[in-house]
Every structure is written in C-alpha cells, then in structure tokens.
Length: 204
Image 1 (cartoon, one colour):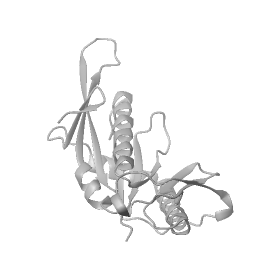
Image 2: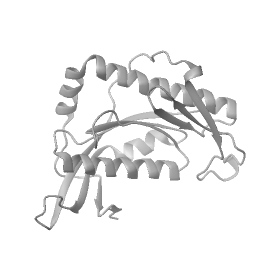
Image 3: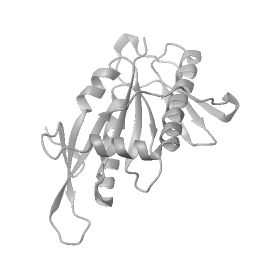
Image 4: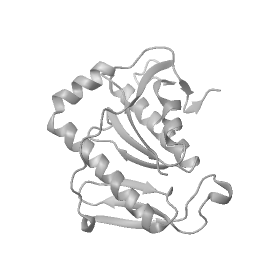
C-alpha cells in the first residue's frame, strides 16, 4: 500500500542566509528519501532561494521517514556576511496542514518519463523500468513514483502527487495571508534540533 506524507520545510521569517540553509536541508531530505527508495515530489514555490517548500513523500516507510525529520534542523555553515566565522541557522520541518481537495490537472499537460526503480528493497525491489517521473509542463511541478508494482500504477500515483501539490499551491495562493500566518505560528524552534548539519554534512 502506498503511504504518503506531506512536509513543509521552512526558514520561517529568517533572512536570505536562513533561506539558503532551508534549501540545503531540503536537498538533504530529498536525497535521503531517494536513497531509501521513496518517491518524492517537491514544490519550492516562489523566491530565490524560497522561504519554504512543500514535500510529498510516498512509499513504504514514508510516514516514519517524515517523523524522523519533523522538528528543527540546525544548519551550521560559513557566514555570508563577510565577517568570517560560522553561523547557526535553524530550519523548521513540519507536517503540512490538512490537504485541500485536489485541483484539476489535465493529463495532456503532463509529460511522463520511465526510469529504473532504485533504492533498497531486496527481492521486492523493481528491476524493470517501472518507475515514473511526471512533469506538469504549465507549472513545472514534478513528481516521481516508484512504489507501485507496475508502470501503470506508478503513473497514476505520480499524477495524484502532482494534483496534491497543485492543490496545496492553489490553497496557498488563494489565501496567502492565512498561509503566512500559519508559517509564522509554527515558527522555527531555536534549539533541540532533531538533526545537525555542519558544512552540509550530517553530524552523527
């Protein structure tokens, strides 16, 4: 059975340096999920770098993976302000609010690509090109699905993940003030990190 988890990675009200840290945390989260054979879809929204991103994670173990990331991530890196030394940036990873109803996405606007499913899984891991990457051309939203047992099933899963991301984006745009208020409310706890990265490397 496919289990999906929806996370929001946010820099809160932090400055551009914190947004860069959030981008680093997002990259590490996505890489770790892919390494475990989970399917991932990401919507980074607006801004460069973006202040927050929505991440959909699917596959067996997706819920427990999401829980392992939930909380504050401490990102330690060199300061960009020209004064030398290191700077601590706190990035929040939170369960997303209830998902609104999916929006209509025309399949004719979606480009599908097949690829070999990767990641661990032993005898249950697909060895054929059954994994699917879907790209919604008008918005650039991208989703992968490798947790189904057939290309047809993965195509349907990838489509649903794009619809979910599009629904979340539509909801945020429709009530931007409410979304900003929610982001500010969840905030970013400064301390008690669930993970710490120093120079882009996870500290054990």
